[in-house]
Amino acid sequence: MPPLHRTLPALRRLRLANASFQQPAHLRLRPAAPPLRTLHSSPRARQEEEKVSPTTSASSADHAPQDAPDRPQSKIKYTSDSYPDLKRDSRFKKVSKEDVEHFKKILGSEAAILDGVTNETGEEDFEQYNSDWMRKYRGQCRLVLKPETTEQVSGVLKYCNEQSLAVVPQGGNSGLVGGSVPVFDEIVINLSRLNKVRSFDDVSGVLVADAGVILQQADEYVGKQNHIFPLDLGAKGTCQIGANVATNAGGLRLLRYGSMHGNILGLECVLPDGTIMDDLSKLRKNNTGYDLKQLFIGGEGTIGIITAISILCPQRSSAINVAYFGLESYEKVMEAFKEAKKQLGEILSAFELMDRQSQSLYHQAKHVMSEEIVSDGVVAESETQLQSLWACREGISEAGQHWGGVYKYDLSIPLPELYSLVEDARKMFESNGLMHTEDEKFPVKDVVGYGHMGDSNLHLNVATRRYDKEVERALEPWVYEWVAKRQGSISAEHGLGLAKKAFIGYSRSETMIRLMGKIKETFDPVSGSVGFGVSCCEGIVAYADGLVCLQKGIMNPYKYI
Image 1 (cartoon, helix red, strand yellow):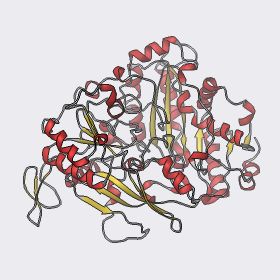
Image 2 (cartoon, one colour; image 1 turned 30 degrees about the vertical axis):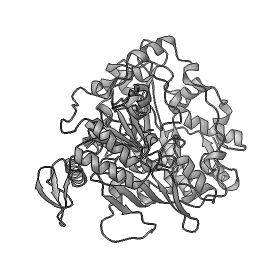
Image 3 (cartoon, one colour; image 1 turned 180 degrees about the vertical axis):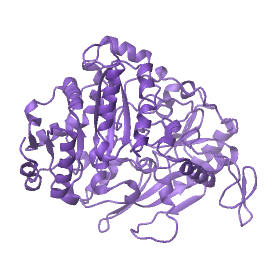
Image 4 (spheres, helix red, strand yellow; image 1 turned 120 degrees about the vertical axis):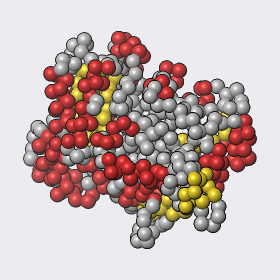
């Protein structure tokens, strides 16, 4: 391979448009991928997949693409059955006919309510609200509310709080940790009708929009005025920007443009008691006390519902390039990253890592590009080649699932040790006799690693021929213990939800977990011990002006906090 200093300068010379980063989403050319079922999955593997579902905290995807896995809801176990130790909280009231009638008055439209309480609505109508994208979690909701304004959200939450009705805020439902679906019979508050762009200033680049605006539509809107939304995800055609903020979504543009914590200028939120918190600032500087909006960014809907956002959108770059390098070792990869930052500085948008094993799985599954593309170092010379280069990265997630199943972990690890986890996991499975790349008697086919190296974010994938309890026992909590010893994070960008509820202690200290609990109690207390007013008795907070508000802990219960 030629020295890096001979190949990297090409990134500055060429002026090829990189649709994957900078083109408006509606102009992107994306290669069509055949359904996974048409690939090399053996009948035996498919049979095993139908029999066994994974019960680990591992996801089955890295970023949810546009289409959900083809798995009927009837085959998805109820979450309450998968987690038998998790019991419905008796404090929460069951939805009644009177409750439904009250919500109809608040929302004022039949289209705003999916009612299975008073109507004979079939389970299939609730599937998209009860089941997550991975088809791993399944709730038992019988009432979906779709408010169209912030005031309607406020009215709904105020009533739910007074009546002790538990709720789950929901956007595009493309999350990967079970945070956006009910566990039992919670009411789903879906924000899809709260979908208007309120304003955009092409001088400052500040976009103000409702939480239910689809990410792709937001990017297209600012793209028409030569700006770019600072977030890009595989689920951009489905996910909503409010939920992106609530989960602090990462994605492919984080290295250059930063996280939601840095790009969000203001939020409009509705608290559990119906109070509207209007902090929809358009200012980049506002040093006036606690920055309360940060609590809602990544809060996963546990302390309130985000109804609108104010976000800084950068100017769209005029020319972007893509390069693909083959390197001999992880040490060489780190050298390349240092050199890329030195040569490209702040214009480096992403630095993605793919190991040999992940590319091998991809080639076996897809057969879409020839070996010469990755022989030394390549800079895309056409739109077709550009798409092929990115397909090598984006296709790994699906390719790994083809042999029967895959266990996926989304982790943050300090760069010097980031790839060591993949090597150690491979050694573990070789030593315990669970892995063989060719012999189908072994459950594990291979262990691969890839991800956003520029963000210290590794996707550890264990590709299996079938889901296997022995594999699961080997993985957890071993993976999280390994990460904890190196002061990493068990969730780099997917959040915690229900999937990682039991493992938060591997990334957060007892003190931090206790403080998170106090924040939850402040906004959505189960008792009146903490609140915005003066506590007077259990579940009641008295305000200074004499008003009394009941507080019941209704926001997205049973999840990580």
